Amino acid sequence: MRVIHGGYFNDELHQYYDSNKRPIPGVTSILKSEGIIGDYDRPDGEFYMNRGTRIHKACEQLVKGTLSWGMLDDDIFGHVEQFEQFIKAHGKRLVITRCEEGNISPLLYGRTPDIEGMLDDKEVLIDIKSGPAQEWHCVQLAAYDFGHKPRARSILELKTDDWKLIPTSKWGKPDAYYQDVWLSALNIYNFKRKK
Figure 1 (cartoon, rainbow, N blue to C red):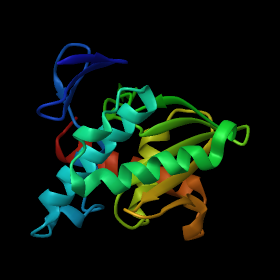
Figure 2: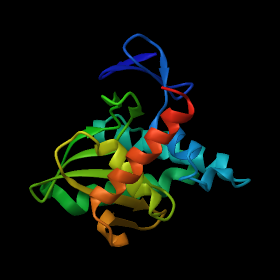
Figure 3: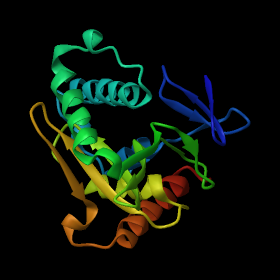
Figure 4: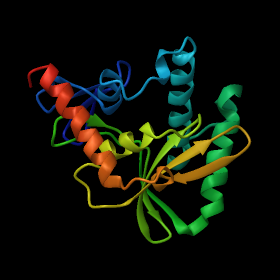
């Protein structure tokens, strides 16, 4: 178990804990529980979830300068290469201040935003996806961003041979809408558990 801002995180179990080491839910568990995420119910869902975890870890290592390219599995190499291309394409216009740093929200849920920083002198929050961007990702970003001053939110779609940065505005709704959806999901989740 490692210390994160406001609590603890167990990497092996992917479990968040408050400062008293009591288990608390993470964003993904809440969204799954409330039926907002359905992707992982597919027969191959476990494979894609595992691949996504490995891609995120490799991207984090790339940002921190600890990535060993020779150790990457073939099925994620292209995705990580595209993440590197994304960074190079933005050059000095992109400043990553945090990458994969978990924390406990004041509303007692765990969250680990993928990328926080500055892009073109604007604060940004970017979520990395190895599959196609979907609207529920906007709700996930709202959960990561809750309690923070407003900043641009985008989904970074990494394919094996291409990348695309997609702003949450693509779906035609304001970020406040997705924040309301997130808070509704969190309240229903807590209500069902009598918290």
